[in-house]
Length: 527
Image 1 (tube, rainbow, N blue to C red):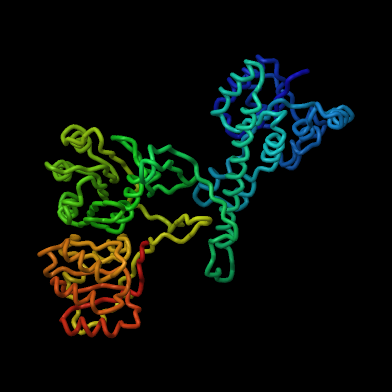
Image 2 (image 1 turned 90 degrees about the horizontal axis):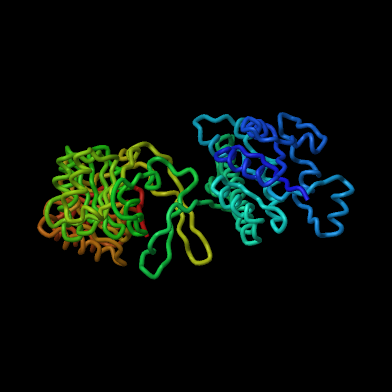
């Protein structure tokens, strides 16, 4: 019996050598449109699908493979008497191999200002239909959907035929492709529908009734948070250029699960500042953060915020790393796990990879678009049996809406430090209290069940540096005890969302103690 392959692809990477290999194995090749022309240009003899079906392509190519002689040849089971009789009666020939990939919908809609009609025309109909038919009938038909499958498929055919196990793997990959394709279409047109809605969208706009997520595995990790946990890193199909997924690792050991969590936290914090900024991340919390006239000054402030906790930390920087900053990074008795920045000057790369004791292990990541504008994205948190979805807490702060609620107004330098502390505090795990002075974090109390305990820890970390510092609280003070604790440490001004039933009690405490306090009206819980 003759061997037949039907080939219809948009991505023609590696296609010529693969099909020539099939011809060498005495396959007849059926194809359509641009794929048929490409193969003929490669010197391959091709039978047009229209010639085989006796039915011409029509409607600008929208209808070409949607024909019983095509799908009968894909779905037919020749060893079943009924199927064999139907195929013989209608002149349907069986296919051994279907090679199909789909219209480039995701690439098309990723272009700026893509037209609605252009997106619609990139919705493939015949391709997914053939893929699904072949995948369903994988016991008889091999379905090839990716160029990286060509070598394995050709090797198996040269040895005889595809094994059932191989066809099952190809089937699974095929359904994975069509699922991703349909999810991309649904996601794109959800945005189109919302954008064109005449009425204001409901509060749940952007959150579909059914959530179909598609992530591609980039890297298997050595383990998860702990050595006994398996883990991998997956990326979104269209991750933004400001995300850790867009970073390029230029040096160092393989990234770990915890590295990636901390790198994401580092990027989120330094993006908050227009001026040179640096942050030191430990266990997904900033143990230090600083801003300055130069990146070296910002890093010095960040590291000195808590130099003990900074050992083995992740560093985030929002400027290209220069020689002056490298001198600080490479100072004695410092150990750094990873550094992410928009870039590294050549001498900075040389110094970081030759001078410190940890030169061979430190991960250096470049993220050129780190400071570019980005849209607010979704955040996913897994719970047993479900998934929580929310907008990431990335909306910019509108300081014009802040209110001074105390008798004393904050001074100019207090106001600057309060704004700085508020930007960093939103990235600290709740309950969060953060002390800052002169553009530098001096104490952090994170993740405590009681806000007054967080206040005590922040003051303890700051030590004498708490004198004249300001304090930020990610949520309201439920009692005056947190204010009393801060005042005892020497804090002179506070910033918090407000909104407690005891706000008046807390404001009165500040007035009694001579403290200034700002209400922002926005909470920043981070569980």
